[in-house]
Image (cartoon, rainbow, N blue to C red; front, side, top):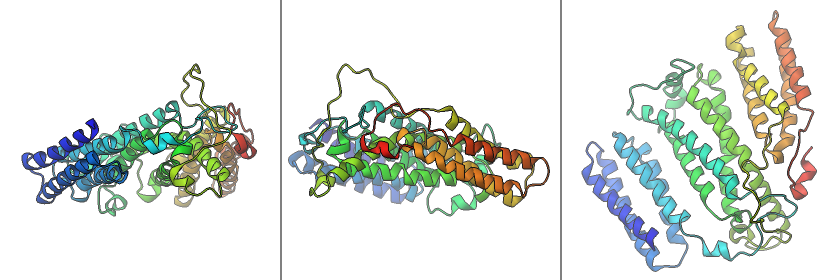
Length: 409
């Protein structure tokens, strides 16, 4: 009940702010008034109904409020802040605050069969939320420049590199501020990481899969594109790289829950409605209340993967230092970006096998080295050989993962 009343107040606030703030633009004024009316109507329906659809309709309004200032190029930073903040609050109040009775009614324990910990525990999800928050801050900073609220963007490492990237033809090819889209995505990722109980890997599997799609494949694609900016744009962007690092660790932290969901769905084949409504997971067990709280369970940092990431960084930045030809420079940017990404993601114990792809990239680096004149050839070949050697050891695996252990090589 209190959350529905808060949603009513937010609807009234949207209408009042649309009529109070100056320099908003006619489209945004109309949008905020209409969105406020829709919020009020849906909140009233939610007050009187026990159905599920009103809360998800409210969440869609919240998503729209995140996107509208980008679509209409909000002329005022105050409007951008107001709409995105209200949108996030609407999603939180509609979906996160009140527990889902259907989810709570699903039987079963919190720790998947054969596992040594719960991948949906809050200690696993809070780091994802914090990393998403930092990525959101970095992206929002760049979006404020793209939308015209800031006169410049400070780049402590690459001079005007950030400005060159966020005003490049690649960036301008988007109909909206692409950094703003990133900030919107990170907002949704934070909220989705916070949704659901500690058994959500088998109580709301559809939601965890949706969260995984947003974080893993889309995140990996955006990360690689960010790291390839020297090829696409010709400059490095400090804030973009920080955002990419946050996203890489978010992927590493999210993968164990994805594996748990896939195991559950595989074991539930033939049972109707399990994907949408969840179900019991025979063999699961409850967490011990006396178990100490551990963050980053399921993620370890073998020295081999740390060194592999450093080799990737070396390859990424070597063209600027060694004066390599354009083709070799582009190849090294690609190798380096993929090596860094694979090394960090492989720090997730469930994804440790991905490190073997670094050996293939190391082989490519060696072959590329034979086309480099002079002493840089030795550096290139040495980096490739080192990468192959570093990809051989699996590194320690501290946790148990049930049937997934068959692919931990």
